[in-house]
Image (cartoon, rainbow, N blue to C red; front, side, top):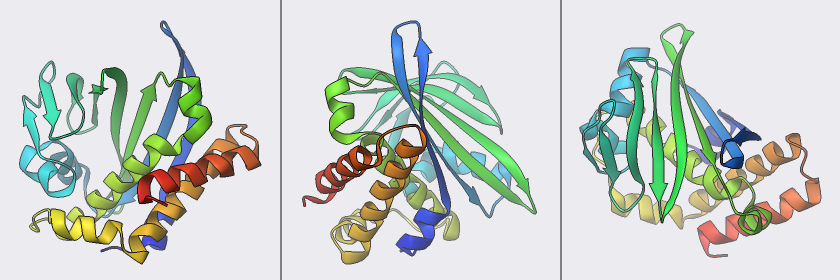
Length: 210
């Protein structure tokens, strides 16, 4: 596995808000620069076989207007597809609809930034309990998976190894650092530091069982 401290520090995170027709929404943005070209990164995040290796098995029609379903997780409709620059889709899970947008931006020297923006209406009581880390930590794990895949593209996804790592000391450190980093993003957005820390602690406990 990739070093937890190194991975968390390589990621940018931002928490914010946006007014939509249906009301106020929360916006979480996460990004990381990878040592690969834009075309290869596009392939990694849109080819079903490759998505399965670093994220989750996916089914459906991965094209503009098509519907997708991640195994045991979210599904939705792809609303925009702009190869190799990015795509947008609904993110439908547990009866709730939110929206994601992925942008792939060349950074020079054969490197590319993966940036994901997640816009969601979040119930106040849920936000007050967990803050942006509730969704953000999951996306942090996704970027970790993508980093591992790009380091060894042919390697299959090893679910048993992933589950063992999640409960290891290194895995718990990753979740702790991710929780703390999302707290910092919340503070930068105006949240009281003590409140942000309390929410981060609850997020960490929810992801690790303690």
